[in-house]
Length: 183
Image (cartoon, rainbow, N blue to C red):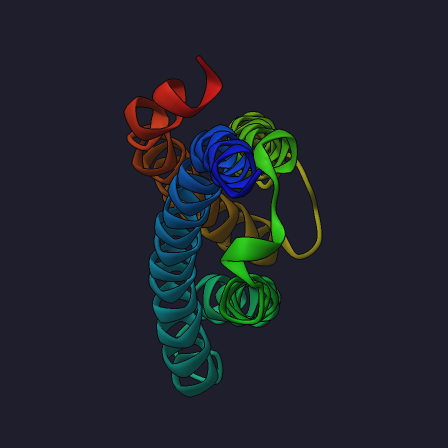
């Protein structure tokens, strides 16, 4: 009877080993994903701080176009710092072991979709910035402001496009670690 219990216990433990191994691999994958998210948010936060610092110092100097350019950069910097801070906080306060395999895949693909959607928005920002610069040629009042704002939006949109596409590929680099978990 004791031998039967030992055999049954052995079979039970052996059947749980793949699940335990998968849980460990899922946790490791989530640790890497969260680490890459934190790194990405540090890049965005650095860009934001630079825009805030330069914008705060320079928006009171130069001609109207230059002041508008730096004022808009300051505004984008504040928004980007808020987004980077929220993303970094979430990535540092999320337990990587709290995701099962389904939620791991869902979260990974959700982040990729957000980055691709944002890249589309970024193209729109660049286009809007160019439109504002063209609009500056036909307005009677505040043409310099339109031009300065437009140049800033082109710059910000271009940076964010590079950032979002780079972050997408940075996270996408984890796909090879995710595939064995799904099979």
